[in-house]
Length: 201
Image 1 (cartoon, rainbow, N blue to C red):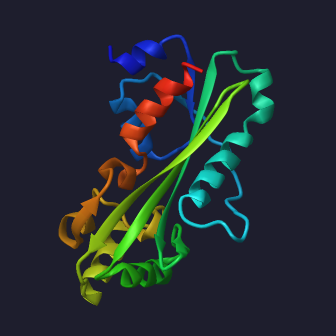
Image 2: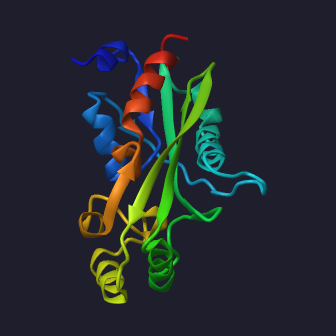
């Protein structure tokens, strides 16, 4: 049993995300958890920039569980997260359709962008949030490559219209600075340390 799993063995851990990638990463840390999702309108105030945006959205998702803590066991910790792709001060969330996905990938082609993930831990009496940043460089992509990826991999549920672990990650990403797992969906190393600190509060 890992150190984190041992520390959390008496906790009721809830991952508030239906993402299979986030489930896999949390499982890699050795945690037992259940998945409960709640629909949340992902809107943020004007003026927020960078990592403050996904961190705000992660807190918003956690606040959706406020009333549930009356019925949850006292040892419950809810984990929420939100990931955005950020370029030129603009947020690229999940594409609305095929045309939007192609537009996003054309914008990322040949350039550096930031993948920003906000995470929130919430218990009955405590709450913390934090964000992680990974810089990602794409080589120049042809229109044919972009269309091939969008039509074959259907990245409509991915921020920035791509997944690093798919074909496009293998052929297009020339460089990454920061956590790879953050680009997948959760900054695992930071989450590990922050969760250890959270249960020590």
